[in-house]
Image (cartoon, rainbow, N blue to C red):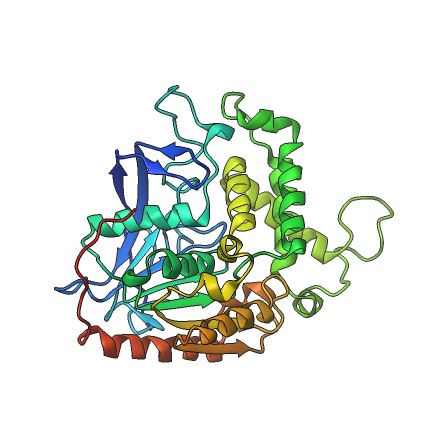
Length: 386
């Protein structure tokens, strides 16, 4: 299967304020996005792909003249792939607060002329979805054939089905959860504290000081990366292998796993924004559509209209299969059409990004079904997004 090839990001500016869940609002913001494939005449073949924590709008393809610039889900999206761009018009949107182009803490606050820094308003999954809906309006897309995402992206797909039920025909939620566990929130807070207590953080105003809180970012990434892998996967890749011939009897790098985590932390600290990391992990923590319904997930999903595919992975202890099954049970109680696949894979949470043949076959088969409905769909009357 061939790649999409070279792609070019696009951007769209919005002057009208976006009301946020916190009570704040954001005006004069820009969303960066990419599209792949062709939108058909009645705009019925559009698929929105929502990104996870450290990903972006660059879902597939490459950037001309930039080696190693392949999109983060290029194995999933492209001509002849599970999400086939010869059939579907696929959109990837960079979320507000990110550090990959859309308006975020690194950009200037129009009110001050200086970078927002920590003053950038806290955003939620629901805020991102409302912003994406505005972009869809501008692109003339009244209803998506599907909204899809893995991990944090799966939360966004779920939120789409709740907030805009008439605009989503199919919802694909991969390796995700209807809310974080206490353990997950704890991991996120430890990671945030690593950043907040880094002397170079400067209360979020490190841009003006010409520094980056790299130590905090390194530790945050190391903590996160441990949770993305399973114990079996770590054992197979690294075991207790030493970097040298024997113990060094110090606090440097003795084991291969230490070397790997520090490499990942160093790499992350070179390209990711600390304020963005704080924002996105808080959005993860806050997502809980059942909260407004006294914790009743069935009630929270009662107004959904989409058909659903949920996929989980057996060794994903960060977003365990039980969380997906919880959502399946709630949807079944609401008489929604639901397909569920639990893939026995050793790779932990990262499995949703990898080329497991069974996983890809499940998604491909589901999109075959979505495609069969595209020509038969009757598009709804257009409604303005909130």
